[in-house]
Length: 202
Image (cartoon, rainbow, N blue to C red; front, side, top):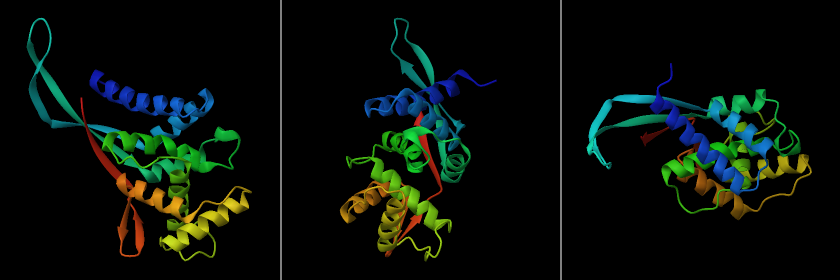
């Protein structure tokens, strides 16, 4: 049976995603779908070695237990969920990257990331980098270099009759993704970090 503290952490995670999506103007159906897909890429575990007595403010002062949880993000599971869920958000499967916003919102909150604007372009760049990295784009070099990311993304957007995005927008998205520890720059290339861990104290 799931303990109360674990439920509290899961509620905390879901609340961040739902509140932010609501503020961004997503409707109830979109929020529900994005939240479900986001949860596919998240797992939780309690760190049992971390048990610290702390004072709690109450009429009868006493001691409480502070528990540290490890929130793990698995991008492989998340992208698998994107492929297997009946994605209806944003109107059609034409916008597969939209579902990534939930995970990015959560990582930004937990990691206290920079003030760079987290928007749909960030999702598009992460989505295309994943496809390139996994060899899903035919006749592509498979290298996560800026020029390849930029050209491949705009080619895919053109195939969907969607507007292209500018070089600076792609660069801003890459900075945000690096800030969130999802990617790492190695020379003139980028590397995807598939497993991310964040500690959350309850």
